[in-house]
Amino acid sequence: MEPFILQRLSELAGQRPPAGQEVVHFTESLAEAVIEEYSSVGERVLDPFAGYGTTLVVAERLGRRACGVELMQERAEQISSRVSADAEVITGDARQLSQLVSGTFDLCLTSPPYMTENDHPENPLTAYATHDAHYATYLEQVGSVFRQVAALLRPGGYAVLNVANIVADGVMTPLAWDVATAVRQHLVLRQESFVCWDRQPPGITGDYCLVFQHRDRS
Ligand SMILES: C[S@@+](CC[C@H](N)C(=O)[O-])C[C@H]1O[C@@H](n2cnc3c(N)ncnc32)[C@H](O)[C@@H]1O
Image (cartoon, rainbow, N blue to C red; front, side):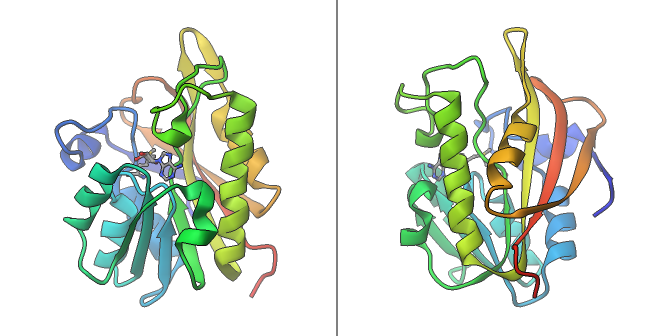
């Protein structure tokens, strides 16, 4: 992966449904670069936080077998309308990933839901539907999702996370670095690529693609 990935905010606007969340800043060109670099045609690609389905749509376009988990029924339906019947779209909670998906994956590409360190009660891992969030618990649970991802990846397989450091109410949360620390307990951190925007999306300081690999190289 290149150490810098150039991104245009205008690409993002063109790829979001009208009611799309501004904070979601994961583009098809980013997904394309990652999927081409870390998987081959016919291989399986997983997104445990599938969102609007960017990973699945691009994976299919590039001849990979796509599988995604999304908590919100409405979004899962949106994804299903964007992919073929061969893609697996599962409505469910990624914290129970190992019960939702089976088999082995070659690549996991995702962008987790974000949380700021100044403990807001809305829980990102329930799509903000419950008010029981704590930053430390959030990080622990994100880590546990990637413990399950590690068990699903083939030896030598990659997990790539698009995650940013963020600012809210004047407080900076080093989310990318904290998530990296949580995920490193289960996968080996191989590389960071800096995502350079032509205009910085609101609330974001540094945006990264973090590249992890299964501990056992193939
Ligand atoms: C940052 S977005 C992912 C954006 C996606 N990469 C895209 O381009 O559309 C995170 C997604 O994770 C979903 N989510 C939140 N908690 C979840 C959970 N526990 N299990 C599965 N999905 C969850 C949210 O509803 C949201 O759609």
